[in-house]
Each structure stands twice: as structure tokens, then as C-alpha cells.
Image (cartoon, rainbow over all chains, first blue to last red; front, top):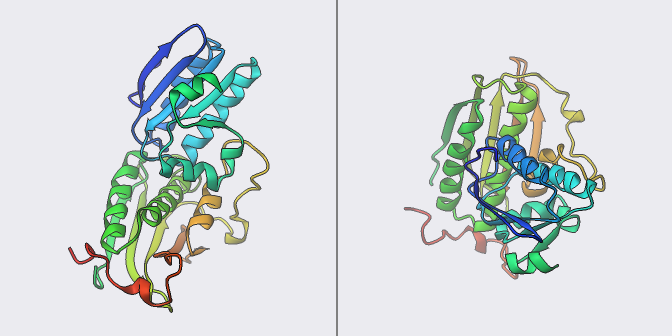
Length: 114
Length: 160
């Protein structure tokens, strides 16, 4: 696992890998977050759930990072789901119209089933 | 905030971004911005600085950037904040600075789109001394059903 202080926790089960993030996702942190999530994707989890409930701020570098990881996961027919977005983070996805592109759930439990 | 103006002089290091965001959030709160408006203003300034760091300075971390925040008042009485982001980086024709179409899903190129979406005014220019100047303004949003002029009433915490 690549060290990244935004990644609070990685939990793996047979069906999904959940990555919980904590902190602001901006240009300062996005490169390391990108490396960490790509590292998780290399394990080819069937379902990659990114829990954003403890992310108070995200800019376009963070959104772009998630788009790149989504492409990596989709390439091996995996599924990537985002959950727990605060209203501020969700607004960035809405402004960029990427809320229509990602599968977004309220809770981790929903993200595991959708 | 009265007529006070805030000027932040930072280097083009990404570690400065959260410091600027903190100052902007605080000023927005003192100026009576709603949480949504404060977030929009903060996001736009973050995106503007990220663009300067990535494109104006090609990622160099020790270059100067000045962020100036000034209270302004709209014609209809609403409060606002004018932001000027000044750098000494590569100049770009302001006419070529535009957000990319959103129907293409790919990373990158979203910063300018976000800035134009959340700010009420946004103008890039190339000062003769070099570098770029971005001037943008965000006003307090009108509440639904509010009449013009209502929004200029100070919020409870404005004069803290």
C-alpha cells in the first residue's frame, strides 16, 4: 500500500474493497491519492467503494483523480462506487456534471449492493 | 468587514492552498456569505491558484502569487467579495482561456469551468509588467423570494 495520509482505511472482503478517505482532496494531495487508489485497483477488486464521508473539500484535481481510477477499474470490468459525499463535495460533481457519470450512494451499505 | 482589504502573498507551493482556503472561508463568513456561497468562492480561488501553479509556473513551487480580497457592493445592494489573483508566470491570451465541454469525461480542464460556474464576474488579463491577472467577484446569493435590497442587511455575525 502506498502511504497516503488521506487514506484513512482500506477494508477488503470477497465482494468489495472499501477505501475510506479523510481530509481535503486538493492539488497538494491528489497525486499521492491517485497513486494510492491505483495501487488498490491493481488488486482488481470486483467492487471498489470510495467512502468520502470525511472529505470536507475536493477540487477538480480530486475529481480528475477519481475519473482516472474509474477508468482503470472499468478496464478490467470492475465497478467503482462513491459514497458518503458531503453537500460541498457533491456540488463539485454537479458543477462538472460528473454526478451523472459516477455511481453515487448515500451510505457504504448501499454502495456495496448497488 | 467594513472597507478592509486582505492581501495574501504566497509561493506557488500546493501546501499553501489550504491556508488560502481557510482565510477565504473566514472572510466570506464575516461578509455574510451563506455556506454554499462561501464554498463556491473558496473553490473558485483554489482552482485559480491550482491553474497558476500548474500552467503559469509549470509546477515550480517557489514563485510568487498574490491573492487580494476586497469587499464590494453590487448595484442592488448585495455584498460581495472581489478577488484578484496576480502571478508572474507565463502569459496566455485571455481569449483562449475557457472551460472545456463537459460531455467529454476525462480528467483535467475543469478548473476554468468551475470558476465561471460559481463566480458572478471573471476576467483574465495580461498586465504589461508580465504574468497574469485574474479578477473575479462573487456576491451573496439572493434568497428565494427575497426582494432586492434585503440581502444587504448584515448577517448576525458579520461585524465580529
